[in-house]
Length: 455
Image (tube, rainbow, N blue to C red):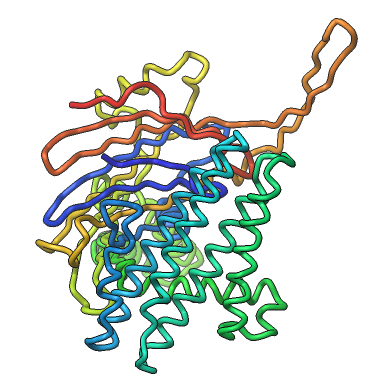
């Protein structure tokens, strides 16, 4: 079953585990209030997909804390450079996922004692993982650059994660010893990178250069792990054919009118010139309108894009994904989905635009790399274009407390309803409604409403 989570800023993360030779389908029905100003004129499907929807496929171990699934391969420096690099990258990628998961869990803890217990456990786990990586430092000079990139990035990434935890830690002075231990570990990792001379002094002095270098290293260690994506527009030739057909039909009609006009005017006159000008002007007007009308009718319900995922090292095709994205009318919503939307409270049933998105995933291979039983398919959906036209809407709320009048500053918020439907390979269907609350700068809340409906 697919999961929907909050990502940074205005992004939603749609995730699903895919197994060998599997075929799954995900549907999303967005109900966007008209007051948000979203429609085909202000946000086209093509612009939304190319600029605000990103999909990627990556190897994923069944246990989040089993990044050592590839450590025995990392320790064997035999084989070619690409084999060592892929095994090292798989190891580092899984370490990063484990660190991210632990940090996210720790940030949800409000009790100081439990928070620092979790933070120290994270530090201990990071020490163990980095120690295992450094134990198998290769002797071959050809492989050292891969190792240095991985060690440099993971050391910095762990340090940043712990510092982020401490920055957002519960405010208290009772855990100064634990806090100093965590800070000392960050300092040790910083000194380790300085001793290894991974980064130049000019890079260390400029936070922007350092952050961008680490982003580059992150992309390098994702080579062979995050599968390379190639996107194809499935309707390019069809659109050209529709445009050519409409042009041919209208031109034939125009030529008939021109020939008739020429037979009625034996000489070139002002009337003939004016009539020909009007005919060609009407041609330009109606050609675009007719083309757009026919194209919207033909494209309705058709897949628009195809993402092909393949291993960047072996060039093997691993999976493919078809994407549907279009504005729809309420009558095209299936009855069972409409029944879920109908359970909303009366004040939430306002005039809205409906945006439909479908992702059809198919895994082509029979087995994955040793130690991996699933691929993690993630789609990042940015709601940034949907809040572009929102009003700032900051106002005042007054309250009489019995002793005086209290004034509260309030912000304008908007609510998007979404139903996520998952179709599994076994033919099962799961539907879940979400309420997405947004303001101009962030997704305030993502709340699942009601129970998951299975059919």
